[in-house]
Length: 113
Image 1 (cartoon, rainbow, N blue to C red):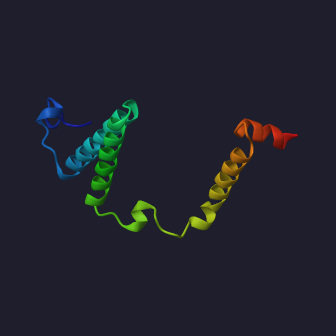
Image 2: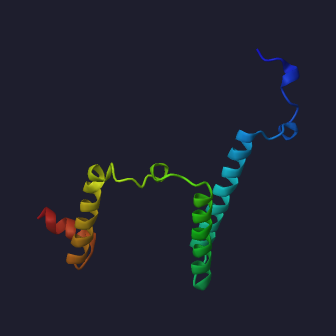
């Protein structure tokens, strides 16, 4: 059991260490991005474009500021062959919806017949 003298009376009296400051900063960055995306989604017209652009720039700056490697970003080519099936499936679905005048439902029903 922990010594009760070591437990702080409130969370505000605990100084932020290097790790918790990083976690707190990441939480703030995610919250700002989330709010910007929500604002962009719930606005319309030119405001939507402006807020969407601000959200995009914010996410790019936050990502690039941490200087991640290609592997950390998941942009390497090692697993692309295994994931190629989803690209082919998406292309087929896009083609079938364009070929059917009534959209995906018509394409599915015509394929079933």
